[in-house]
Image 1 (cartoon, rainbow, N blue to C red):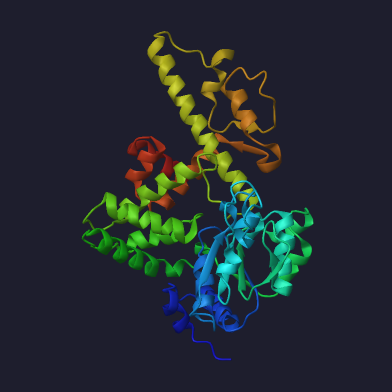
Image 2 (image 1 turned 30 degrees about the vertical axis):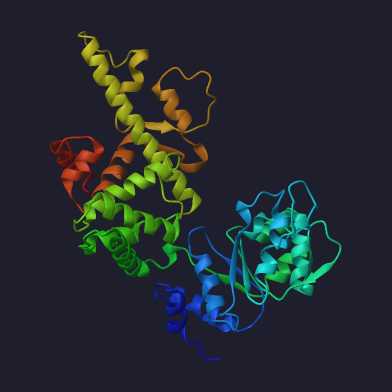
Length: 403
């Protein structure tokens, strides 16, 4: 069967022309005009609800209602009543009979977002609706028939939930008949310019803000960012940039500052992107912690210099941690919090022997300078500012390390 991908895009204003997006939209076209249940998977913010809308809009039920239910937002005590309705007097406060979401979706489509959050007893009743088209209102004894197509979505690994008995195995395999995976934004970064243009034009038009666009370099920075919040995060960043820089053309520097701020705010305990292998992540964390320790050492040296006019003895036990020569290797091992009496102890505690064995300050310094230069495309002024050293010192280190 021929699938018109452009028609599907236009039906709900889906953005993106990358291979990943086209593969996903092709699957949408394949299942849309059937009544089969569909499970949509993908990370939070990737656009699962948009895919559900595309399926409905291109189905034979497109002129009927699409009822969207966020299963995670409904308290477990009332979710059965919300989904299947209740009979008058069935519980305190039930002053009249009420239809549930399934009855409201009769002849149309019901989209159950975050289906992994459903309690197990409700999952059993949902399975009956899928297989037999029947449900019973809370407090009633009579079965009701419903003709509603079911589309479900989750950002959880339901297979693992099944293994932990948190999700019914029979329901999982019933839903898994057709599974459409929505790619994370990091998997189709080539679509970012289209997203930025759409979000920018829509937001500025709605809020009467002049739109002067984004510089090409600013888009490239966006492409290099990991976007843990996916399309939702990108939209929020674009709108924030346009508000805070009203009427300006958005430059690479503006975007870089915003992204750095977002990364700090959302990942204060994990200052590296998490799309790397575990050993690389650990090394990144170690390198950053060593840099912070070195900065702390420099600050302590300055404090001691200003508070004590006497020359400091580098061989003194109290000051041995402040005068580690650059080539001194540090033996890496784990330790307890008790017994740490100086910075050297703290540095040793912060590292993991299994990860990198031995590493010297000279190696760390070389690595950090090299990375900063790469990050700022060889800009030595910015590199010196970030490393908190003078440009003169940076030039000397570059020559010394032959970078």
